[in-house]
Length: 260
Image 1: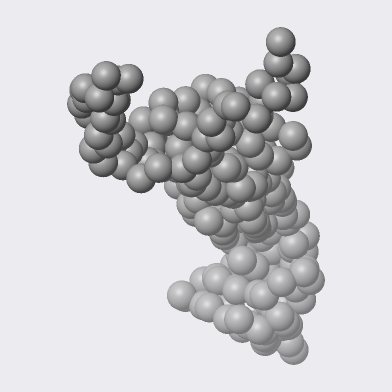
Image 2: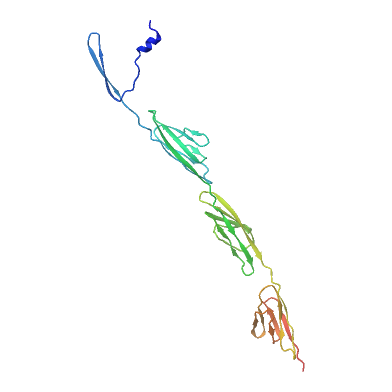
């Protein structure tokens, strides 16, 4: 009986063959022959992997990878990511690798990039001061995106530079195309302090035919009075009796005393 090592020696060693037609001739002990043929084909077609990623934004925190190819799928990527799905969803930026394995054992590889866009639109806002001469002011807003203002008395506006007539704090939210937002505030102050006009006249007499009006107040002066009198001096001199008004606020009457 042959030992195992002797049987091993009798086995035909496999060797690589090229594709094509192979012919077998078997010769019997009687010298007769029989012939047969065998076809060796070759299938080395790769499965043609293709991969695509996307961009993660503030409004889209995850994206779907898309893979194509004729076979099974195996994805790998950042943070030890692995998936056998054809189109897995990922939430981390980076490079993802797809290996497609065909039924013939051949593989094809492709990569997909997932980028991240979380830049804020950089909102800036400025207000102003409401006064007696300027009862409303324009808010100014800047930023790369759409605008949304809110403020006192349920104020809301989507204009970039709306006009407001109430003092207070106004909030601007700018939303970028990537869904990221940036916030800024603007103060609208109110200055309606009156300048405190005071006026004093005098008495015209035979010895003093003209007198000086005296005006005080924090601002510019505008007197008006009898005979279409007008003056922008603080302390003008007048020679007609009557009532003189500084700036249309506080009146001062000028008397006349004449003795015969």
